[in-house]
Amino acid sequence: MNAKELLEWYILSGVEETAGNEPFAQIENTSHIMPVLKTTIKKTEPNALRQATTALSQATQNACQNAREQCKNINDLSQLKSLVENFDGCALKLTATHTVFGDGDENARIIFIGEAPGADEDRIGKPFVGRSGQLLDKMLSAAGLERASCYITNILPWRPPGNRTPTDGEIAVCLPFLKRQIDLIKPDYIFIMGASAANALLDIQDSISRLRGHWLEYKDENGRSIPVLASFHPAYLLRNPAQKAKSWVDFLRLKQKMSEEENKQ
Ligand code: URA
Image (cartoon, rainbow, N blue to C red; front, top):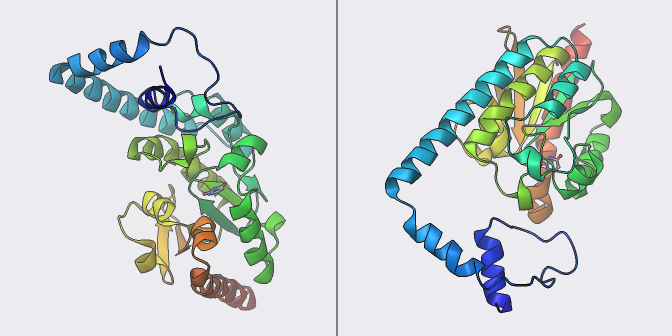
């Protein structure tokens, strides 16, 4: 098998990134693998595919139901953290190094929510500690907010391989964990970073350019209404620095509302 065939084989097998410096480390006797794989793929009957898809969707629904049910018995964040660490209903856990649970003040007035851990977060086990996290830290501090007094979390507690976009099923299975974190912390405000997190939590389908800059609303599981501001994800801002100004306006909007509420009290 030459390098190109080997690479194709990796891709077909679902490998999306390399963990070491030698992706083409010698594999002996691989010549039998490609023909077998190609034949298997060609031979898969539409019926078998349909059955597999139905089984997958049923498994996802069961996992969602399990996550929701198990969350009902949880009364504090450390219990919830153990529950998530021991939860086996999401395949992302199999490829992740760490479960990245939320981090910060349990009594925070504000929760920041991103999409999913990246490579640095997966390695260290904390949310927003890589380049996106460093930008978030700078924006928080410029807005006069201390990271330690906020709570920072993600829609997903496990890194999707190669930072791919999470599937709807993965989001649906993990959403009860995020919602329970919100119920337990009872924040005054939620700041969501990126379209995928905003759409998931608010159960909508819109672009972040349209969502950002307006106060939105999230109703927690007890029917309590929490003001939500959505803005660009820091990773997007790193790729598109010209948009930082708009994000800064969103941070100032949040800060202003927090100050107004404080002055009322
Ligand atoms: N991007 C996210 O959405 N979350 C993290 O924790 C890190 C990067």
